[in-house]
Image 1: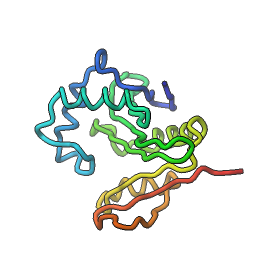
Image 2 (image 1 turned 45 degrees about the vertical axis):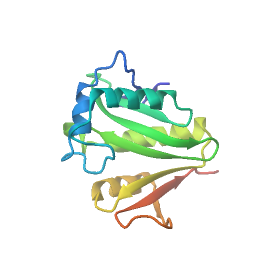
Image 3 (image 1 turned 120 degrees about the vertical axis):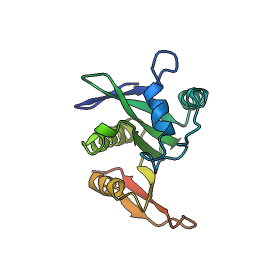
Image 4 (image 1 turned 60 degrees about the vertical axis):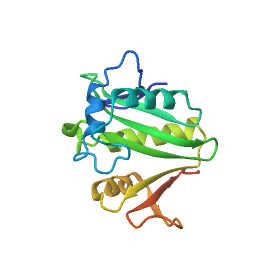
Length: 168
């Protein structure tokens, strides 16, 4: 699967041919990735490879690397998981390259993946979880059309947002 935006290519990561050295740095950078679950200083390359392989093999997950079209550099990832066919999926994004943050990457990539998921997977909604402390992400998600929803038992530190497929 290949999804293309104006500036980026979204494609599955290949544990054999892709260089994961930057990805590994992102997953060890706890200071820059405060809101990404799984980030820890002790993250190992084998952990990363196992993770990518498991997502590539899962029928209810789609993990795509975000690659700059010009340089072909891997700058982050976007993921749908779990995907509940003909119903909903959760989306998550990591812009690992700090120099690419606040440049509209999230908006462009999420918009493209949401549109694709609605049309190709026939989903009726896309959901996400976000930390209340992550003001930039909340603003992005609102700009994309996501709305906050109340979820019982949800932590005080985070909440869910949802975007519904537009019906005409």
